[in-house]
Image: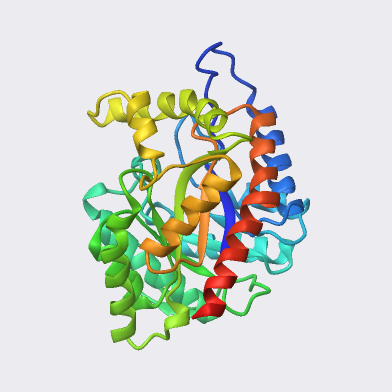
Length: 350
């Protein structure tokens, strides 16, 4: 199982002091975090595209290209690219370029996004929410398979044999499909034979088992081999020396961020009781000491029928850089070895 980290490059004030680092400092901190994740042996780092004041990640490929020059092994991916409001030609070019810079470590996770700001920003109609994504995904996959592209659709000018350059180092640039809880999205990923990333940011992960089985069954019926139908999980979490410390470190930032989003969407403010319940034994949050987080990851692997990757968003808000760095160190040096050892033992016993 691959373990990694996701970030939206959050830029929020400290909930207690109100102090906020500069955007330039936040970006320097992020690159140090990615560099450390590579050094401690984590497998992947993802940057999620957002177009809001509290995030600096409107251009993930640019950030990842900077990280590529400071890392050697870690895979670098979007998490996600909001494909519906982007141009698939440009997306492919950006990530093919990243693949060249990183010497074959680039990936793309595409999705429709959890926020809608990019649609009006780039002149797209939300009434076309699903058709935009479906059509643009079709074009992106066409570009991946063909240097010279013949394609037509409703939302973009046709391509009539133009070449799309550069081509990546990897013969097939990895493209994952990022989903929430919509069954049709799981079906789409299965039918296309694309690897799947499920965002599980609340509730209980076991509830997604039936949707993951739907994805795998759809893929099987479409003729895709089982090894192609891989599942990754994205969740929020934090790691510290003790479980109590991890919870106390994350909660103020988590509550600040989710209360703001909740207010926009008509939800009540996040409480400590809700937070503590969600980090419980069967909840979605991966918060605790290294042993507790490893145990929760192994639990999710079991209840979801086997997963290939799990990435943790450590910064639900601008958690102090030194604490994030320590959490990354613990993930790489203590959590990852525990998980990999247990998964290897379980696999050998099958």
